[in-house]
Amino acid sequence: MSLLMQGKAINANATTTGVSADTTFVPSQAELQARQRFNSERLGIFIHWGIYSLFGQGEWFMNDKNVNYKEYAKAAEAFYPHNFNAEDWVKAIKGSGAKYICITTRHHDGFSMFGTKASPYNIVDATPFKRDIIKELSDACHSQGINLHFYYSLLDWARQDYPVGNTGHGTGRIAGLSDMGKYTEFMKQQLTELLSNYGSIGAIWFDGQWDHKADEKGFHWPLNELYSLIHRLQPSCLVANNHHLSPIRGEDIQNFERDVPGENKAGLSGQAVGKLPLETCETMNGSWGYNCTDLKYKSTTEIVRLLARTAGKGANLLLNIGPQPDGSLPEEALKRLRELGVWMKQYGETIYDTEASEIGEQSWGPTTQRGKTIYLHILKETNGSIDVPLKSKVKKVYTFDGKVPLKYTRTKTGITINSIVTPGTSDAIVVVELK
Ligand code: FHN
Image (cartoon, rainbow, N blue to C red; front, side, top):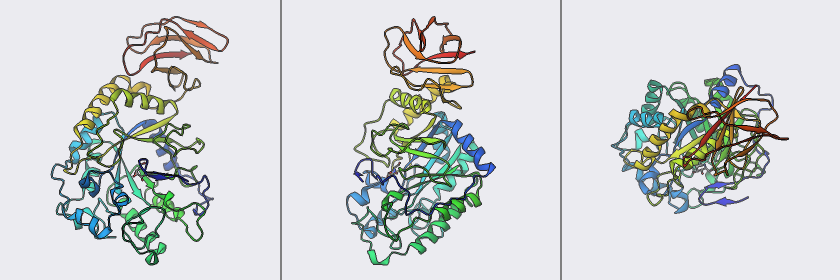
């Protein structure tokens, strides 16, 4: 078990003991269709926004600096994001080619970014801003036609009824006051609100299960109750749980944090890749919540390459932005959204609604496939030719740009494509049509 201070996660053992999963669960037709829709989308934008943005040190500030929850709550009294404009956010995000937005409705700090009757500690009742930004965002998403997902933290550093786990030890909660039954009712009330007051929701994205050890005695995450509530309230709402374990019944998406499925460079994704729709989440710079010292944004080329690599694994990329305390998206993020949009307009056909191809990822780059068309995403310099292992018979090979036919020769294991020019672009795409 390891605590990553930047990855901000406890990596639990690969067991689901301690979790009440419904072993009889069978996904409904609506859910299966929603999985299909999700699986075709390939690009989503993650938003980590809360009162923590005021401190400019990321969403784990409260834990990292051992801030007492009563002191931390004073930030709510100063939260007035006067530049927040949901329509503008959605327009900029849609412009990137993203098909969905996933926003933090309540992160580990326990502050609800929506108007909830379950606790006064929320954006409507506890800030001078008084506006339900989740309502405004959901209205904008529905009117502009982009799917909306809700991030929801299972753990809470501010509530007494949440049993103290691996994190949040310095936030002033008194261990003896925990009451998991009461906390479960609180979560159920909030999830009911989230799925009743904001129209159709594409997915609930849970996080924080790793706060309690998988084999902890006497502790049970009530996942069965939460998942069945979600499926009952909105049958087409998907369930994702970023627990860094293999998915359990009732879940619709397998999540990978900061890693392409099958890789485990960040140390949170050792689980085997399963059959559910896959999603990789990654930051645009290095932080989830707004961090005023983190200006190390990935270049658009790096993002495009990551997108091609995740699509090559049959996964979606959920790319994160941490909005500023004034409610605007950082200029560096907006720039990348615009540039990504230009790329997606031209090359989206090779990404959306594709699957992992029979070729897989090669030394020169990943591959995607739709029907009998395979897209080779050449990301690395080549010496004028590439080897493509392939069992199927080839009809034609050509460049995606300009549809220029390319010569190829048969080899024992597939084909070698000649006269490959690797331009200085993010991704040189070659199309292979199969017979
Ligand atoms: O602790 C969180 C972190 O703040 C952030 O929300 C990421 C996003 O995947 N998930 C958690 C760590 O697993």
